[in-house]
Image (cartoon, rainbow, N blue to C red; front, side, top):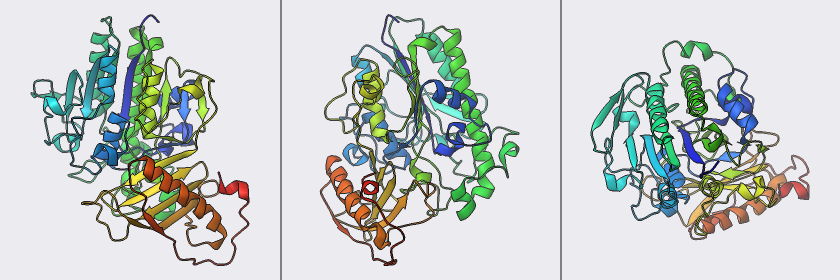
Length: 451
């Protein structure tokens, strides 16, 4: 390889981690992702820092937390003064392109040039869920002209991706292409997850994740279509891999597969996300290509904000010290073994909430008197939940009122306060949850507290 590697970000919307075979799903939905995870670098514990579309996208475009970008809820355009990942790659001599859903502009449809985050090539729309349907894909080009792409929406966008890759592979400059699919997000105007024709039937009534078995929600209505959408996304990933191989650039192209947030199917609140539970925040993430092949299944708890410095570092671009995230590359290169096992989560719209996720524990706080639509933060929070992810990975037993876990809560309270400060927030007051189970559930050993 004589030039810096190309980069493709394959970004899905609202995809749970356990939709993938690499995470134990038995339905063979994602053979291409599973292959990529097996031969590349699989981030086993990949956690979004904001389980809402627009805020999560602002984090991945800038490497900052949502309260730092200012786009802490949907409907707030990305601050044009912030430096984006595209601008970092442009300065490093890359062609940059964006295809798909943006959700960080001021219009519903086209995105003015000054709001595109510095991308050179543009084929996108701000709110794809409102400007298109499963078989009606409409995007806007560099000249703000609407382009109708034929086919199922995933396929239509993938065709555009392959055309871009084919064109740019002929140039001397490497490319950075961000591809943002809407799938498997629900189609808002019908409250459905519309897969390609014939795909819903493959998965309806088959394997159901334990949280959805226990809590129900809308999974009986929606899970078949949702998994059908993911199956087509995985086929699109395979098509892109095939295109790279046929163009003989597969060995010089990095692919990052990840999602903005997950989906709890109306089990944790009245809709699909906006909570601190794994079903909202844990997403499938894997890298392949130069620097990542053979990286194995990584157990480091990794945040969405860690992906930006990791990508930059993998291409020889020094990540700014101002970014709160951490690059995984020193660990993958064998230069370091130090990694703080935690991911910080900010929650808006449904609540003003915060959570910290470690290798073992999930601890969440909520501002009881704050409005998540109008307030980005609060001075006071109350403990809301504590889960032991080792014994309860689908978070069906809230331990926040157990006296046996007081030391765990005290430890995580300090961690979440420190994380809030690192994200630029003021250190708030956190009220302890009432002890409702004073009897000891079991002994918590000192080493378990710190896990």
